[in-house]
Length: 370
Image 1 (cartoon, rainbow, N blue to C red):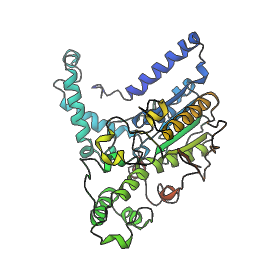
Image 2: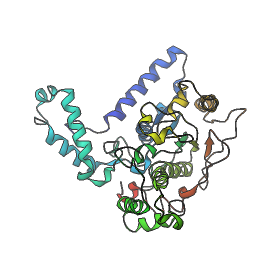
Image 3: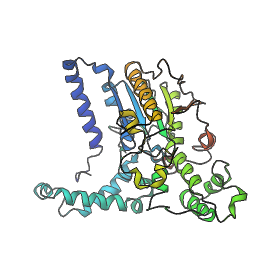
């Protein structure tokens, strides 16, 4: 948060680095016309911001977005101003006293930022819980929300959009959320507190997120698996699929995938759910892609080899299909053809059918019109 109110400084930093690449790549035999940008989680939000920045378009040819929490959307300029006013109020000096500002310690600056991050939701609900400080649609650098709140621009770049099977596992099963079993009645309360009226009734009536009647009064019922599935779909998977459909509608190509095999990222083992067999939590795709899994299983090694081959092909041609692996179909405006990464076949839409999330139940960026 720059005291003078300048926005999207991180986006500008990345653009500076990409401009540098344009200059130096030829010295290393590289092609400035074949730059692919990629990011995971908030890094993927950065990639989406660059896709929404016309002045960055000539700096890269394709993009990869892993586990982008697209439900939140970009911040509005008005919300950013609210956050800016609060942040500046924490500073020990005026925003024009450069000498004083320069003497603020890094620890204090980080403390002010943590204070703002923890307070942001009380200042403006549109910030959401996951990324309260994020990219701003300022109308100058970032000119489009790249979502359903405004006409989708014409696009041409190929993109890859992926998620992991249990994106919400870390947050749902953590000690700060629900380390113990969640009864059906509590599940209903959490859904109500998250979605409000009338969306709560639609969510609880959807078979993908409903607790079966036979389990409603069962004392042994734990609703956390359903809550985790709902969180994964609401924040990550469904808005990502909506984004892919919009991208296709704008004229670009999109490949959509879901990791069902992963490698527990350092720190994820603090949540026991994320260490269970068959669970792939947020971040568990990173070491697969980079090939840094310690002592990989045969499944992990196989998927790493596949994804690195697919990434290499995509970076060179804009198409991740390679010999020896299943055909990865292009998404269409009606069917994203999400490929199971680490398994076989395509992923069923479930609640990510376009007639539910984004339509009957709105994403946060739709609710707050940001």
